[in-house]
Length: 139
Image 1 (tube, rainbow, N blue to C red):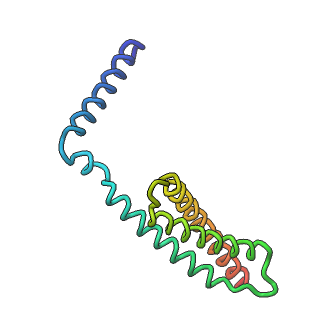
Image 2 (image 1 turned 90 degrees about the vertical axis):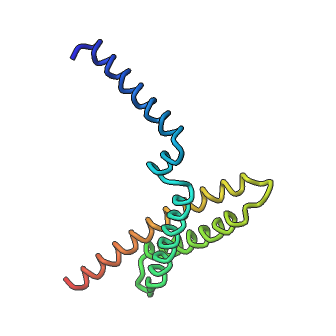
Image 3 (image 1 turned 60 degrees about the vertical axis):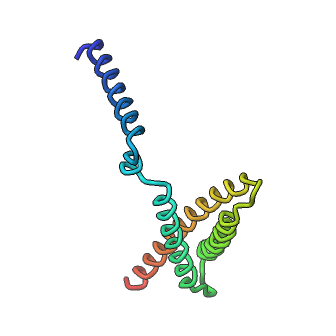
């Protein structure tokens, strides 16, 4: 394909995408149907957050620390509880939506999502360490 034809094809594709989104934007409910509404995103975020909280709490309670526990295991457990508490506190700030201080609510959303990400990461690592320890005991 010649460079001129490729350039024309690119402009045609861009024009097609723009036309598609303009038509979709002016069609009532079409963009929401094609993507997700804010309500369904918030609802999904709530359920995913609740599941991550429950699983992380369950894993943290299931981790028994004995005198032979490694420093990494102790640190993982402490970090797990720190992020559970941080997630809970930022979740409360989100629910409060302090009037006039929207920056706090915005930062709370960010803190909540960061806490969720670290809770999920710590849970995955803890479960991995637990399964490898169980596998080593059986071998």
